[in-house]
Image 1 (cartoon, rainbow, N blue to C red):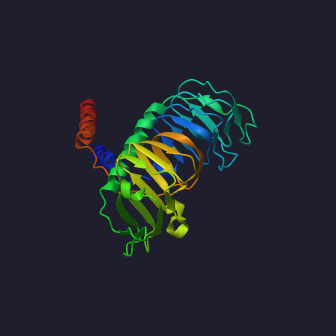
Image 2: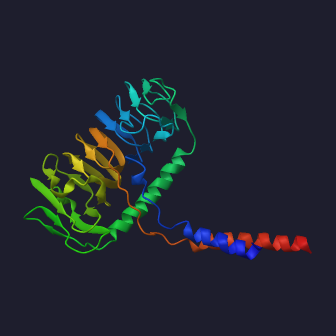
Length: 309
């Protein structure tokens, strides 16, 4: 391959670098950009990424993962401050700050209940920034989609009757979603997955909202996009994954889905039902970055030509 063919190949690779990629919510059961502050017993069944500190008493991680794993199933960019015994039931716990744990049991097969799975690593702060940027773009993409389904507030029903086999999209105000004594039902027809965009900043009405098994039992195919939220008190068991990257989340019950938020206060179990969807391209490659690369490659080619003379 000659130099100009290589140049075109590299340029093509750059232009493809921002093409669609699977959501981080398909890799992680829990993603936080601030601290994890459980006020009671907390079990995270899948992989976890915590951009701040790990606090609380006796949290448990990786409950439903293969015990033979040796990868980092828990990543904490900040400090490990949890009291009691922290349990890592599969894989390893990586941290970027200081280790102040009261005790730890690594219960995966290679570790046998010791603390051998805990290790310090670099680069988790940068990873937190990258994850935030990716999920922020994803949230904006979903917010920008036109609603394709309707909401019957008399029947507490999200209903989609179209022919699309990809996404059904609903838009709802948070005040309506968390209305008193709601018993929400969902029907998304031929669509494979559902996105529900929820507006509003401070949301919640603990104990008042029930997501029924009529449609909401299909946990892996539902995503709630709280694109404006800064605080959410979920109260009852929540069904489907939650994208709320700027929100302080509070719950005393279980999540049936992945969760991405700023901070977490509460207890319960976060069950390992992940949102497995690859959004289309949400960002055009930056012209400046591409031109900078092309300029650099051009100078490299000029240097080669001079050496041949």
